[in-house]
Amino acid sequence: MFMTKKHLVLVPGLLLAAAASAFAYAGQEFAGRAKISLKQARTIALKASPGRITAEELEQEKGGSGLRYSFDIRRGKVTQEVGVDAATGKVLENAAEGPNPD
Image (cartoon, rainbow, N blue to C red; front, side, top):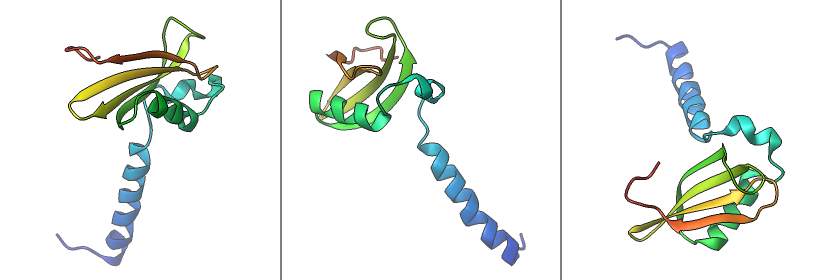
């Protein structure tokens, strides 16, 4: 395949677009209803269960205000699921993830 200067300029732009979309999280469409930000919720979750966040989402779920951030936090061989109320910042869940994670 023959590449022109135009192709060389396009490729870095496509890589940048792909990287930006990787920072999106599940449930982002609910973000306008959340009183606390994803960044604040991450801080709260990591304080409740230190480790490395491997998954995050904003979801409608029973309990609290009905809108919560959910984090999977890995520490060693254990993955902890931490739920943070998106309105109050209260930790609603902090338990080891079961054998059938959702």
